[in-house]
Image 1 (cartoon, rainbow, N blue to C red):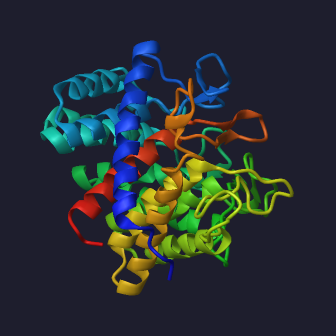
Image 2 (image 1 turned 90 degrees about the vertical axis):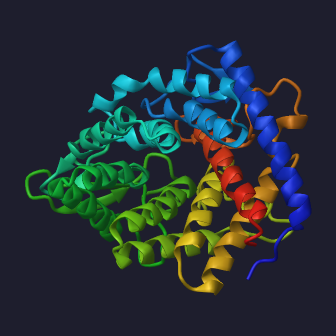
Length: 381
């Protein structure tokens, strides 16, 4: 069992970090109105760089919805609605596997706060569009790369397919969501709970051929952000499906993260923060993976029934947040830095957004802060 950080100190750190996050997002949209930067270059948002794929446009609006929920300030709602509307047509986008990232963070939060039926229908449409990526031979939702490609990242987007299926009573769509999760579980999650980034299938037979990677060190190593996509995504999938196999997988992925990442004082990147890949010969911190892990672990803590396991995951999440709210990662003491979290990585192998702020790191950090502040305020810890 991990040791909790001092909760009074943590609460203050997180409140400061949330306030700083609000200021940084407000400054970003004032300086770059109606833009969707993905990563910084030397600490400043870089608009002209390679994006590899268009998947981050929901995160600025998602943070704005969190700020509005917490503050009830009309300005944040106006901004959140505006930035959500800017991506509305993406609900029909069949070129990406990331519609959960786009619409769960924006329109689903919007619907939860307002109950507006038109907003709910947008979420359902996005989920239906996402479900069109299903490959019957192979039983998976294909990645944006190619028909034969399955990404671990898609576990973070399958939730919107579940939602659309359950809200509309579409049994076929529900089958696709379930089968995708089981295929990912079988071929991308290894026996020790580690994950592969990508699986390649034979398009004629549906046979699984091999594991691969784009962002990790090797096909048989463990890319940290993919690991956190899995622990978070399988938890979400379980909460929709109630299939115990998916919860077992979420726990296996979480336990692997905890086993491979030092939570001790003096850890290479601070307690709870992993390298980009645990097995790469030269490693560097990946703060966005830590932020995703913190948010996913809080969800997993609330999902598991065993008190010991729930406490373990909750403690780990709070330790990660304690680290990320410190001066090494929070940019509030770094003059001129336009992001929130430093030391994130987009695509190490392509040299994109390395040791910078990255937009999903910002979003999942703010989401984790919101969850943890609510948890501490309710005195459940």
